[in-house]
Length: 177
Ligand SMILES: [Zn+2]
Ligand SMILES: [Zn+2]
Image (cartoon, rainbow, N blue to C red; front, side, top):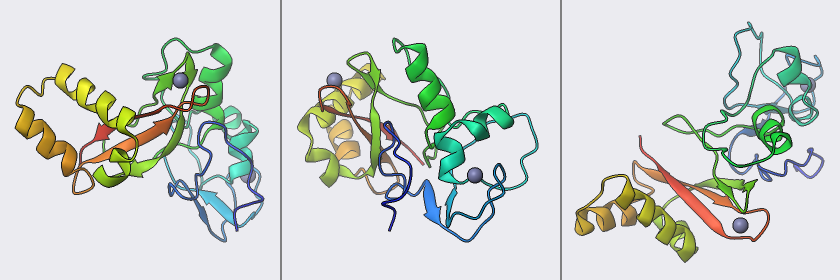
């Protein structure tokens, strides 16, 4: 069970998303074997011999020791510096095909829910509408092609689903393989 893991405000279920997995592995930062290991992105210029436990992510020690970031600040416009640092330095990253980025809502970073297909995305119509609008702005002008792309999310391309930590609205961006 993952009930004893540290809580990540902006990535509340990193086990479900696959970013943290149960593993017998020594953490590259604290050298302990906690039974859990982080498997997603870490950006650093330093050599890191191994992977991190969730606790060294949560308390910022891994990011500090290796002068690295788990998430890029791309997309995190209009949030406070505290929030920016919490996402980049103390929040597990995301497994994605393209460079992952973080979504914001209500001037706060949104919480990453997971990678989803069309059925799960359609359960949150506001996220589907917002993604459709974003894709139109991004250059999808053929409506039937756009709907085909959306309804086939989950096969090849997927949607990265987030939830606003302030108002609860869902939002998403498309990740293509
Ligand atoms: Zn550790
Ligand atoms: Zn909101």
